[in-house]
Image (cartoon, rainbow, N blue to C red; front, side, top):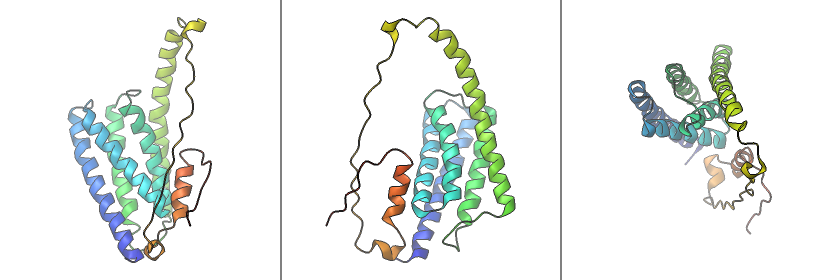
Length: 200
């Protein structure tokens, strides 16, 4: 499999995920509390973020990270999915589709000025939606915490979790244009990598 075939697979799978995301957003327009719809949209964005990071498509990875952060708060019940939030997700879906189509004929993704400005505006909108709800959370917390200040109510921090991840790639990995280092670099964004061991 050459690099063009790998790229075509990424595009095809991403477009399929975005189509699913759009269908679920239409459901959420009618019922914004539909849990399966919310989780499906999150999974689509999370998957595209992961694969774009592995392929080195940083503009897609960066944007989907912002969208994922918003969706993670919504699916965990920390934030309500508002009408404005749904409108943003539709815009995000269209933008990601445009970014994915942009890599059809290139190994790297460099945004043109118009697309770059649009991405900046959408990221700002995502942060605005987050900040509004963080503000509401702080107001709620200030009331609840005032009655929970005794030592007996303090939470004991849990110990940090550790994982061992084993990657066993195909012997012809490099022929497909993939680089294991890109995968390791992506994992490093989610936590601290204590040790990397290469099996002989």
